[in-house]
Image 1 (tube, rainbow, N blue to C red):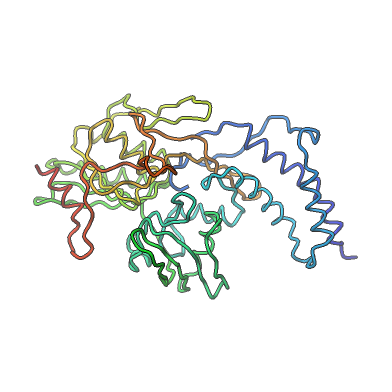
Image 2 (cartoon, rainbow, N blue to C red):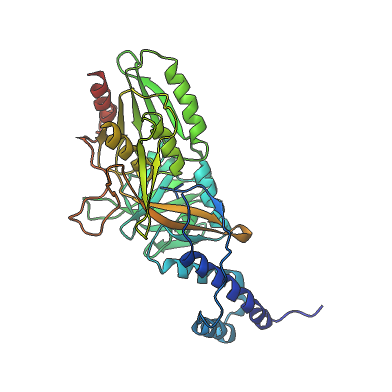
Length: 422
């Protein structure tokens, strides 16, 4: 059978690309999308259904796009590098990136798979959640008992560069997308990646060598603290697909102890996850009809998520532990309980991510995470990071205290215990 010319294949694929690109453009500009669940505030995943008529070529001018496509096809010196699928993915990624929103992203099949692994909490890597501070890649939080935590990586550290000899990577992070950064940092257990970090309050970047491990992150941990172990301490590590079941188990354990004085919800270093999980946990303490979170859309319409069931921990005093790694769904939970119950926040100011993304599953394993709204606390506070340094972002704590790394005590937790004990 004769070999098919790459040039012929490039021309054949043009019709497919026209249709796909038009569909993606229609999808982005023409539809209001649903709920929250990336990692930091997500709606539950959903399938894309498009019933709107696709604009004709008269409405969309692709002449420049095809001129560049044909020029590459005709003139690029290494024809074997013209991977048509990657070129299409790259074009779509560029279109999505033009919005200037680091949380609205197109994911190729591998990137989409990695994101699913992350939400499920099972992967091989170094154990950090990453996001953006302004336009700069940064650590949101290291996960407990992981290589990053052991090496002293802190939430808020800027990631300036990523190096991996085995992958032949030595790359700065300027302009990098979130999925690209995740792909570079993750790798096989036993391999090593080097991150160049810059910490607030310092002038000199420093390198951290991290040996990757297999990481399994549970949603939460329950312990009982206080002089008589009469305070429930629930560390919520993420808001994933299995969080509500693990939360149910924890609540049942708490209810077995009638002498419980109160509950400490610890969302330090929790980068968020599914919105519904935050609503479920908030509802455990609130009254039916109370507002948990307000979703505000671009057309200024609003949706309010309210408590719809009897919470099992109503009436229990609650304190929340927060820090700079508490983001999105963590901030939704903290904001709801402070606004509705006057619950105290103890620790340091939260991350400040006030937008909601909805993950959409497209064909052939690709995905699109799209910002569909901003969220507000019940009293209307928008926590999102603002480029104006005069405007505060995040939720400021009611009791400001930081853990002293030079001691074995957890001073933030001790402060919360004293609040509830008194």
